[in-house]
Image 1 (tube, helix red, strand yellow):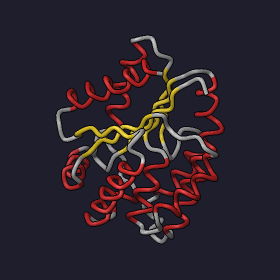
Image 2 (image 1 turned 180 degrees about the vertical axis):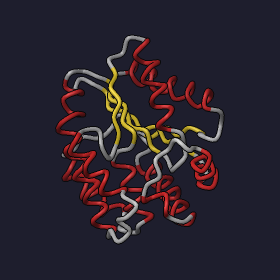
Image 3 (image 1 turned 90 degrees about the horizontal axis):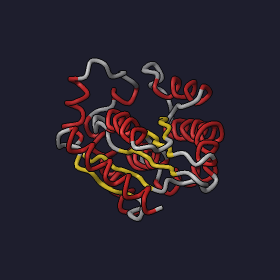
Length: 210
């Protein structure tokens, strides 16, 4: 692949979606050929799967069903959007990827990180990010931010209690330690300007190194 696959991870309310949008604009100004996308979603089929996963009415969804739906959405998203962009040499900024599944379904849903990784290895066929930015924020603070943001969509995962989100956070710490060679942790509790500046610096170093 000629391009760069950079993923943004973090618990609810970490601000990664906002920061990704700002960084897309900044990198484009600097002359990089950038596209932004998200998971689940990013293309029509994956967005349809997203609507099923996050539908507030689907409270009976089994954890394994959830994990499989994420993996299916991920596969279609890669085939239709991410891989073609990387082959063209673009910088792909993606809001969530495999690590979200490992933290949410693997650890917080207690399906097992290795088990969920196995499902996703089949889906992604060896394609992993070259850099993952982990926006680190305590669950309580992230959920408080969400509560103040009237523009944000409210989905099924928002109905989970605090203990679930605490487990997601613990899961992320385990995943970050496991894949420390590509993870870069950023303190997301600081101002958005500070967080954005650090994230931009890390990405530019990564692109220049390549």
